[in-house]
Length: 261
Image (cartoon, rainbow, N blue to C red):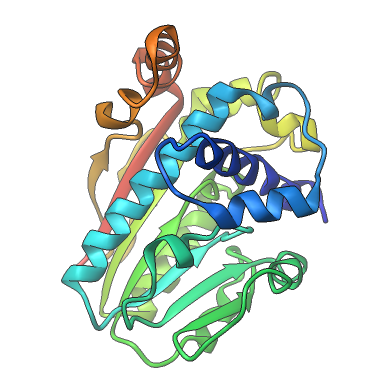
């Protein structure tokens, strides 16, 4: 795997870590894969604080997706940059057609742990080259999640992806997390992804800069809701709130929703 692909082990570890401790989300598949893969992480990439953040972030994405699926029962679900994530198990297809998309080498590894079905397919594809959209069965609506992906794409590449989704579907709901430009600048020196060889990432300060066609910026979501922080105990709750839910966090990470009605 290349360096960007190896970043998938950081959220995998985080979800396995919190699931084992009964925090934020139940993810036995993450525990199973992490145990089997045995990938070596070091430094900040194996921080319990980052693991808490990864677990909460995934729980927030899951909640949003469940709401969207209830509202649009005819929509295709597209998880871009799925890595080894078990969202398909945590959320379930609920009779939607679900597509997990990632680089070919990631999908090859993923197929060791997940099986396709009539409702669930794994597609080899690059977010920067949207030819994989042709493999999605005819659908007028799409619900799209991009968790931990946008920071590896330039603004121009993100705009091209948004434009392709806008052209392909009559209705789109998209949720993605982003670095700010300040976070991207700081990441060159202090970021857990550096431990797997990634040094180039990108940020966005104006969410409207990524919208295109009829797929427009809708609103910002809370990345670390208080209800999840309150699952932590004593000093850990206070430390996490300061590191990942305060003013500093807002300068680094944002969670944006885009919609085409």
